[in-house]
Length: 392
Image 1: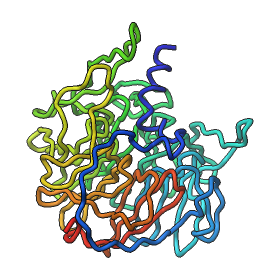
Image 2: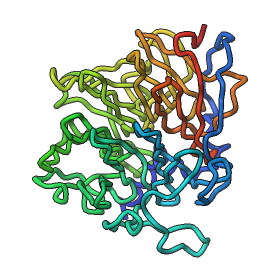
Image 3: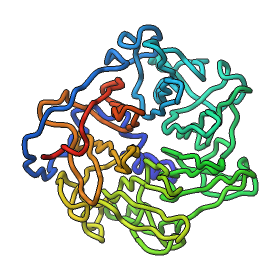
């Protein structure tokens, strides 16, 4: 039972956030710097009526159960990981439909039960899917977090390409030989390589085109005494050579134009950059201590704009690249959308913006509009904002 207890505690950041009331997600002692007035961005609710459910139909009348991931297809389709419904939903031309997965059973309270089952899209089953990504052929990849697996959806249906449904930490010569622990997000390179934020293993994994699974960085060996005699493993922090670098519950991940990786290092309150050619890891935004306070699983966060080296985040999660090479960040427990560009961090949302209960993922469309997944709002928002004017 030790592993189960550890999992529940560590999941307080990731999957466990889904079970916390929205009011409890607000940091009690967050240090917030005064932000200058700026033009309010334009917000539109693209999908979701705010209620807990899985109703399809007209987008603004449809319902979700704590959505956690989003990806935009070039044909205009928007795929949404409806996490607590255990479904992949699709928004197209103003309507929501179920793209993959189905509800095969419910618990005594009437909530859907997930499991791992491959097959045709309409008969496959997921368990708390989160991150989504597309490859160059338009195939959809899913970080199926509750199944500790990576799934692929193509014209033939759904199949598991990494993991076997059992929590663990193991590389392998094939995807089914490998094991993951609650992966939160993934990115697909042009050559088909899949990079995975293996969140509760605190590592970045690589699934090669031939199916081989490897771990890119060093696993954490840090332990935390949460109370006398109660010791748990936790993530850690270290920049430098990739093979010795360490993360603390990495979540959002995306590729830049050079084929390198940005990672939202959630438990360390930082945005990290992995140069795959140089095999190095650097911090590109987020200032906090390089050491953890006694008894703390995570570093302390904050809410400060300005130079990237001194900016602060509060559990950053989903990230997305813009056409100008900037990085949009879902700063979850600051209930804000932030922007990293040219060494500066600004806040795109403003005091007059509609409140975001728990922004957990973002995407940028070809027109520059930012799509936001508000997990506790059970809604998909779209924001029109001038990134260059943010914070002015």
